[in-house]
Image (cartoon, rainbow, N blue to C red; front, side, top):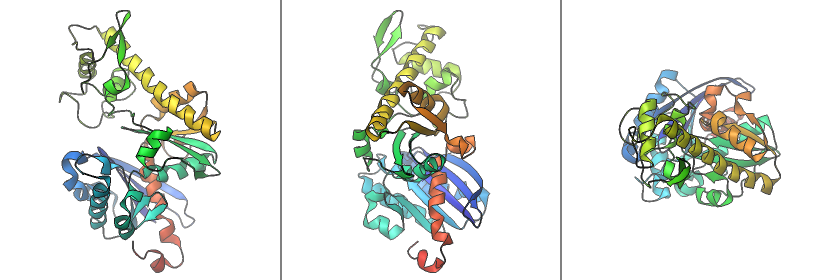
Length: 349
């Protein structure tokens, strides 16, 4: 059995094609992604989904999770969910399901209650973490955000359900490995034995910081740069220098790297602060880390919070951890294909 799982984000759309044996155990996982800025190219979604899946051949079903409903191409999240779900459903001739807050939904259920499918991809990732440890916290640091999801007895028990609620509870931090505006992380940075205030402009993002520090490669830097220039370390240094209204003639390499290191430490500190809040409230002291920032942000946040942690690469291949929500989304479709009364079970999908 082969199931495709798509996680449709505002900037990146991730794919996982999961092969399962008759017992429902994973025998193979293949992943890929496409940079698709939904705020500019939402009408390309169906074509991108089909193009992503085409090299992997036929599948028995498709699962969809999404966070792209929040992009400003949509007036409301409901409008976004309906558009994304409709385009995704129309793209395939096999059963298509959507991750919702209460489990998988068919298209009719999504159209009847769109907000249940809004930003619910963490629902798909939590069961993967639970396979590693039934009482833990999922810490998923992606390109844009960090999910902090408590799990007890193998079941997620997040206090917040929507993104708005999870921002209030510490279960969502809008800080990620690539796309976070540096000016949103720090008000001041160290420079010449002083603390310089930063310019509140979109000069540099965390991808620039992590590229300069050697935390990510040029290939990891998906998406566009803020100045339209390249992704070399020199280009990234130039963008960081602008954060304090400088340039490569005004600031030395050491000064820029010190600024980057401070921004990095502040990002880790803020994520660790939220992690500790969730840990104390739920009396959980173990964390399962995943996502693009698994090793460079999430693990550091765990150490700062004084919590033990296990990487999701204990369950998945390291490269597949970046697409963990897509893997989980595919697995959530599996019960609908394995029950005895297949025809009844797939009604509506």
